[in-house]
Amino acid sequence: MREGRPAGTAQTVAFARAIESQRPPEERLFEDRYARRFLGRDGLWILRLLRGTVSRPAVLYLIDRIGPGLLPYAIARTAHIDEALAAALGRGIPQILILGAGYDTRALRTPGIESARVYEIDHPDTQTFKRARLGSDIEAIQERVRFVGVDFDHEDLGGRLRSVGFRFDQPSFVIWEGVTQYLHEEAVDATLRTLATMAPGSEVVFTYVDRALIEGTRSFPGGRRLLAAVRLLGEPFRFGLAPAEAGDFLRDRGFELLEDIGGEDFSARYFTPLGRTDRATETERVARARVARA
Ligand SMILES: C[S@@+](CC[C@H](N)C(=O)[O-])C[C@H]1O[C@@H](n2cnc3c(N)ncnc32)[C@H](O)[C@@H]1O
Image (cartoon, rainbow, N blue to C red; front, top):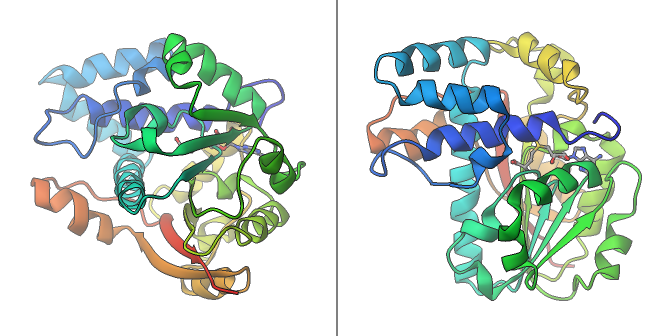
């Protein structure tokens, strides 16, 4: 990330959620009515163009040309994680930890989340911008949401969490959406090992980039452009996993892989049932894992 500036990539995913949220209710996977607050003038202007019946197909076509499958992926991953969070709340999980929260607004928009304590962890620069944009809405949730500034690459996550009252002896649900690829491998490793000390029954849902994209060993539509774009934003992709090795990678760090989905799975599960033909990129996936019993 660039020193002293909020993450540009966090704004990009908020943009995707704002686009999804302005679809008609019967067509959309979720509504995040706060997402547009994080956009600049350009983003708001594109949202306006997407409301026009004539301009909409052209804008969607261009968005897909620039980043093939990225918009459907960003939308589907959020829907998928929303679903996993709802299930965790349904099981009565008392703590929700959102790592690299960016402009995630689940603490505000998820039904039933009031019953849990929420910890939002992020780089301090992104968090400052988020708080400013949410204004008085953040005051309304101040009682049950702790905002904790942590740099995963340079700080001890476990120590920071304990210092703000996070209980490692209680079951938790952890969301780590769109973050691992920006970290050094040591930070991903240390974070997972810290999370593996949470109470049995705790789960982590996280996204990861296919390592073949970063290493250039497989060609993905728009892959090179994506790597160049994130580099330009000052947030290069650093960490990736081979999907076939995800289970072993997690097992070595104290987790049992429960689910790992991407690409076509998203169409079958989310888009096709709504009569949509969106196709998500194969470059990134979502994994859900449970703390393995000692
Ligand atoms: C693409 S955004 C994803 C934000 C959010 N989870 C979402 O999906 O909307 C990446 C997030 O990772 C955070 N991040 C990147 N590097 C970080 C680091 N070294 N320490 C803490 N947070 C970091 C950024 O601040 C940003 O919020």
